[in-house]
Length: 320
Ligand code: UDP
Ligand code: MG
Image (cartoon, rainbow, N blue to C red; front, side, top):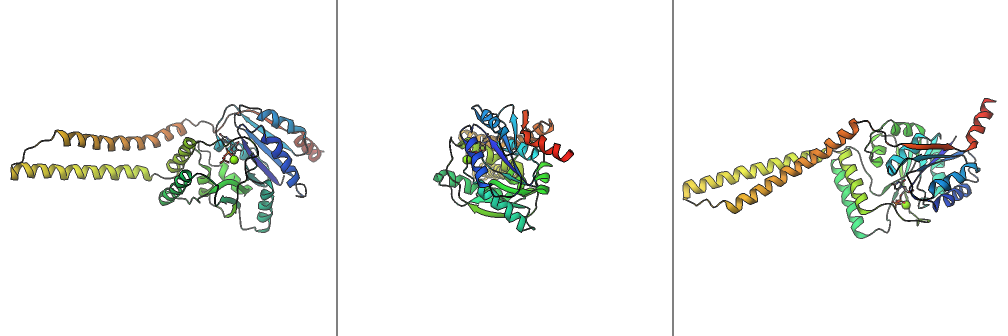
């Protein structure tokens, strides 16, 4: 098998048949064999039904169907794990990312043997100003503190060579932030710009809060700098407290000032209490991750895994 297309899907019933037909058309003259690995991420619509309809089609199809919605990160992992290709492309089901470009990526990898991965990034997405602002600053902050480099606008739409896929799979951490993992494993990646098309059908699965959660995953997953911020803030507040104390003592002892502490005491308690809570919160974030990782929970639970007949036919031919 030359190429696996890994497709995470959450409520994409309208897009599955269109995606399949587009792939079939775009890969008509590809000249190599390929498979589609659909991951049904606990969809609540007819996504699984639409996938099953494709099991008898011309293209070999695998379906990994989750027991509930585990999120795109888990879906990508499951897809990679069930892929067989020498090359693997992660691609969305909504056709915002063109399968024809995936074919081009494979061709590039074939001709440029020193690259292990071709990744896409978007220059502009026609997103709202606040979202663009949020994303820009997120990348600025994370690149300042994290050990690996994050490229702004980088998407999950990528094609890997098998050794890189295996490296990514070897990182079986529960809290996944794939853009970080892709960078962490190393290898040589070529970034190419692309313009996301319009969703074929349906709506985006991202909400603002899902994005915030995702961003925090990136920060807590790839840097321990917030822990340091906590210590620095704590230290600064303690120093402020000491200076203030000395000031009060000197004022009372040397200049006969009256100590009217009621208001300032309240302020001080609030300030210090706030900093302590913040520190505790940050420590808690890391602790929570260690706790859940310690349980060794699986990244996903598949209810069923289906394969088109094509696969067994191929093995029969090979064995026969
Ligand atoms: N997706 C998924 N699980 C989720 C959310 C999204 O598998 O919990 C899939 C979704 O079906 C799509 C891809 O991830 O194929 C990208 O999602 P979406 O198009 O909503 O994101 P956007 O393109 O708006 O960034
Ligand atoms: Mg999309």
